[in-house]
Image (cartoon, rainbow, N blue to C red):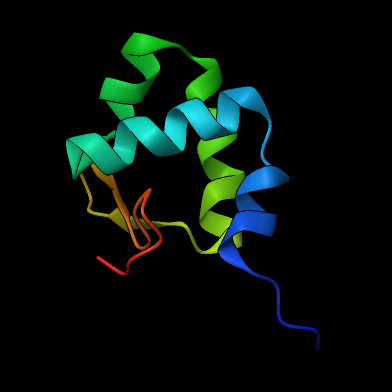
Length: 77
């Protein structure tokens, strides 16, 4: 498998996905309800961020959190 740089991954994000990633990075930890209240499309975009490994999902019985794995500066959180 070919290794891909963070800049290449970020370059492949749609404007909406990048906006969501930046919001999660600056907020630290957000809930699914918080993302939904800002823009319902954020929940769709966050799925790709999880699959790319930029964001982690933590599911509890009553709430779902998202938090950054790699921040905007490219450093692991």
